[in-house]
Image (tube, rainbow over all chains, first blue to last red; front, side, top):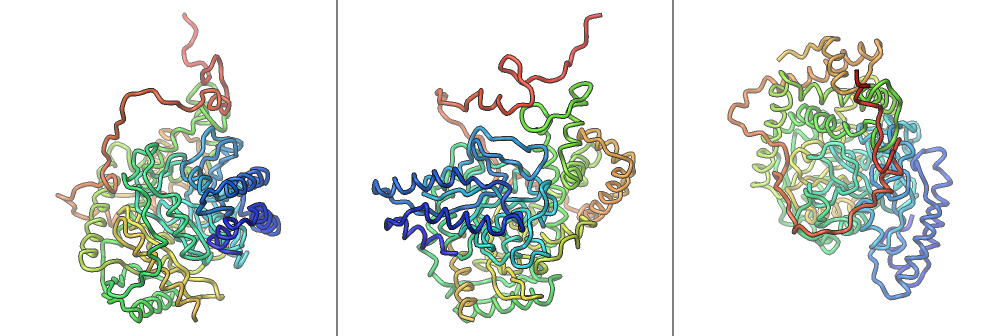
Length: 472
Length: 100
């Protein structure tokens, strides 16, 4: 697959965007039936958008993503196009408006190809919780692509589109990026608008890009970032300059090599992180070995905070205003029948967990305590960043795992997120970049974490690792 | 903090969350939720007296704008996606009974 940078350059030079759309459609039709990456392919819309891009280029417009096909996680609202969150409760729903991130991609000349599969309401780490069947990992179809943004990661790995969008509440961009061997960015909380993004856990959710290389991910993030008055949690500043800093390197940077972000991972993963650390050292970074024990509490805090927020966010699926309705004797009966039929097991589990954690008598012990642990996590990160510029660790404890291997035990599945959750609790950015190979020659993701608004530095470090990986 | 959830606890929470669970689901969720909460017991046992709670990474503030009329989303577009509509309103099963 040609890079987004190269596609944008040739379309800007007069090559038709239609060619790019047809190439993408051909790649999708070749493997989508097998892999279940896209839930909906918008052929007609993509072709029409390509014509518009050609016209805008002819008029002299400068479009940073001219003619670049993009895949959208199916929790991003797209006007008139089905948006399901991989849930039966939203099957057939067509949003009456479009998410800001999608509007910005369109304004930049990108071409949405369709909507990708996810774990229902973004709750999961394998896409096995999708009501429309799992997505298969393009690198080994017997294994999961990760989740919850598994479809968007797989779209890149299968060469269907050069860029895609996902959302990351506890690792849902970085974990599938690692398992599919692509780049994934979870931006600073508030950097990217969430208007039109279907809410899971509002104090944690953040939209970000996937790409086959660091530069394309950085370019995509530049396009979607920046203040949006339609999102009251949106940061006030304009989009940061990222691509211009990709060659900044890591010379003189101090990097924390964090024990708790590697402990418990498989030996192949730990070895890849160690090798990445040596690359950064060789490029002039100072490595500081650190222990941040507070990070180990993150998983427990997250699995109370996120379900608590989800239990209130998902109260809106009551059969009244949109989506599924199943009749009942009265309103409460209708609500209950609708939710019982519409939600899958994992969504029910988390709604129950959240409702319990927020209920009288348990609030202080669970939710209240989790919010205090969140403070501990933030303080621990701040202390670390007083000493170092950023942190390095593993993205996931293992390479992509086989289907069914963790579905029986929710806790085993949740442990996949142990290294990614702390950044969500803190609202900080983190990047997963492919580095090295592990079991069965599957890719490994190395994670770079920084303080709020440190995306430019993180991506420069990710670029160093990508360059080293390519030179091997 | 004990995390030994009973089957009755789970049934009560399901009712609060407007979910109906089968007997098998009640058994399964009781076991699974107990296990998840058991994982949180280490955290629940910490003495965090004096630690402030953080509900949001940067602290939410009220966002205001001048009180001027701007275009809003199309009502008909929203209603077209509803399961049942009457007279430009979302319709639900009858709430109030017949007069005695």
